[in-house]
Image (tube, rainbow, N blue to C red; front, side):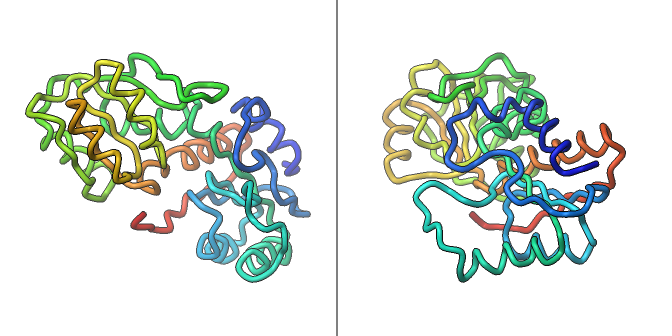
Length: 251
């Protein structure tokens, strides 16, 4: 499949052009060769590109790509090396940021629901074209420490836990990545626990004072699902070979 055709399909699937995002969504680098072997991962770091090169991949699909708002437009240093790897090896780069958080089936937050065995009951507003955050519930009420253990087992890292009281977890809100800033809004939604990827100093006080448990489960850890799910979908749809490569990050 030609890179343009693969990008056009993914753009439509994720409604990518409708999002006002921090970086361009879709095909960020056009390789010369048709896509037969696809590598996916969270971030288009050099380590992921090196693995893609080792596997002789034709394209790389990520959640965190390049050309972020506010960054220097100059192509030098680390950015030059990454782009040189792609261009020298004729590999395309596809990146989907907010669209891959929001998708109801393939998105990061939808994948978290499956990983944590949560029943999705709705979404909550995040000021984006489509809401990114989800609302749901475990099959039965859980103590906070039991829910935290479930998160740790599913995502492979211990979350930072802020208790908002001694109540069990019945109703949950979540949003992957750096979404801790939504906690003030989530506190008005009547949920018992909110989890995201990161934590800021004010998050602790909001959680405690609003009686809302908060878990910071890792930016990288909460965003593994979307790129893998989209890669698997594209591979099945277009008979591609697909490899998900997890370049570990403690963040």
